[in-house]
Image (cartoon, rainbow, N blue to C red; front, side, top):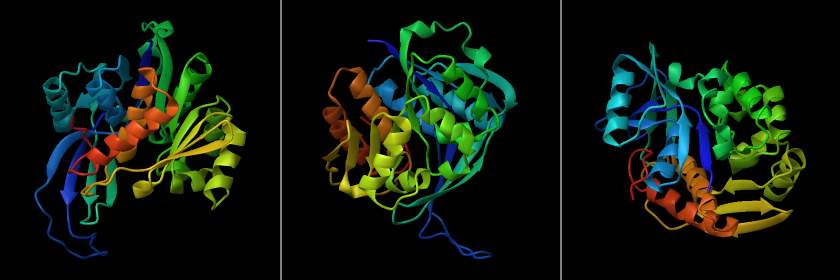
Length: 289
């Protein structure tokens, strides 16, 4: 069983629970705030770590109070940081409403950067897959990530465009799609990637661009796997939704993990649905086993 490479941020999430978002110039009282490690890539890496799947998370931990917090928490979870930098580390304020819906205010630091040279001493023949997410591709160094992927075509790409997919330069998206990634999206993200408002039509159009499997998360309806031009649905697991932060990250992290363990795609999708349901049942993005 070969390893999984994960490229992307480990940031600090500051979770602020509140009844609803205030209007402009408005005011609202919140419940106590909490600090935790987050970032799409770290959320994915944490799932692999907890499920004991061999992987490498390529990210930088920076300086300042957020970097200090990140290092302390990584040490507490038994995770060795890949790279430590003197550049400032960032954070993300997660505003979580009573419904479980969340909004983000992000300050990006060194954790959202990438350079090909960081992997020059890594034996890439020991890896067979790589996870990337759209928020890093949107960044200035996103072009370097794509160049790395183009130079390592042996790696099966798992690509999660994320909710900011419309902010990613279109030429970068096209370059990634040309590398035949397995794509993981929500229904709204799917419709942002292709001109469609139909699930069946949307996955068909996206498949024509990527020529590989597509996973679409459908909230409390479950998830769809589109493979070999066949649509396979797996129902969700009932749960009390508290906070949806990190649910999609947990889902793709679990799917990658169970595929790596040798489970079928259908079994991996079902187990991913289950683990994602446990994440939304509590505050914060962390999977608790």
